[in-house]
Amino acid sequence: MQIEANNYTIAVLGSGTMGQGIAQIAGTAGHPVLLYDVSQEQTQSAIENIAVRLKRSVNKEKITDKKRTQILANIKPVQTFEELAKAKLVIEAIIEDLLIKQDVFFQLESLLVEDAILDNTSSIDLNEMGSVLKRPERLVGMHFFNPAPVMELVEVVQSTETDSEVADIVFSLAEQWGKSPVHVCSSPGFIVNRAARPFYSEALAILKEGGTDAATCDAIMRECGGFRMGPFELMDLIGLDVNYAVTCQIWESYQRHPRFAPSVLQKELVDSGRLGRKSGQGFFEYGVDVEMQVPKNAPESPAPISLIIEGPEKLPHSLLKLIERGSLKTKNISGNGVIRLPAGAAVMISNGKSSTERSFDLGENVISLDLCLDYFQSPRIALA
Image (tube, rainbow, N blue to C red; front, side, top):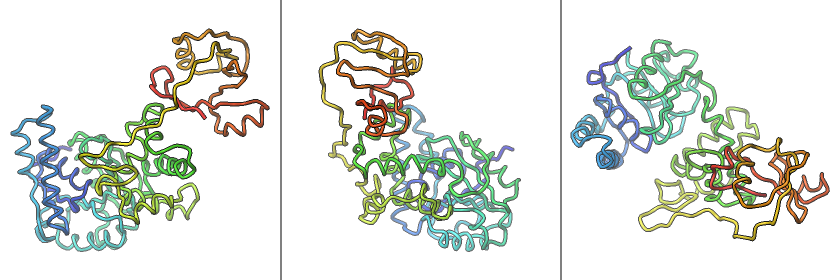
């Protein structure tokens, strides 16, 4: 179904990072957008931030200056709930607090026309959220990912009460906005936030254990794992307070299962006001004159004279290609996928055990080569 954007008013509640992004998306698509925040200063700051981002797009020739002016004209800051009455769709992107969200939706329901759609962007269970509403069938989830104007995926979430037609309208809107929506049922964390918990929690555990520093971990995940951003820079972008709140919600929803447990390290940063990019400090520091932390590479050392590859057929093709490109003399013999150094140490692809445990099991010194999507193309490899 095609929705005529200029006749379909959208309200966005909350003018933080996510609210700004959603307002920009809707404004770019041609919708009249009403942007509300309890702080008028925050709302004005949001408009200015959107203007700056759009100016960058003009400079990169992604949009024209005329288009930038049109988008900004589509986004109108408002100061009261009553001004939202004409909205056909209200997208809420406020604080991660169930009771506050329920109260906001309860107030809005009495102001809006009966066929208006209420839209929640958080990972909180939609069934619980809609339990206070007279028309829970008009409540749907539209879960964006940060930065919203760039990320294509949108999870369209249905509760047990959500009218399928409502979900289809929101799905079609997302498609019109150039997004790639997917239908999901309301469950703790939905798809992405549930699957992403180990991405954050294991990285936090590695940092706490002293396995490596944040910048090096991010570099390994980007260059070896193929992620666009590492876990620490992504948490800083999302906001540590938001990321920590989502982790706590999912943990509680799964009866505090230990694999979803929040990190004390992250809680300490949140409690101290180090919330990431928006506060200027998180795992990293931000500012005009601040130098970003760089990964710690191992110092250069002399290469061995030769290598023995025991069982090359059991090693990744990209790793063999990397070795062949070098100048080392190699000899292939049968075996279980071990790269033997002249000093006797065995280099093995990581199998999940620590190098210490593997050395004890095998009775020889083991160096674990961490997993990598493509050893030949990656500018980095990780050894333990």
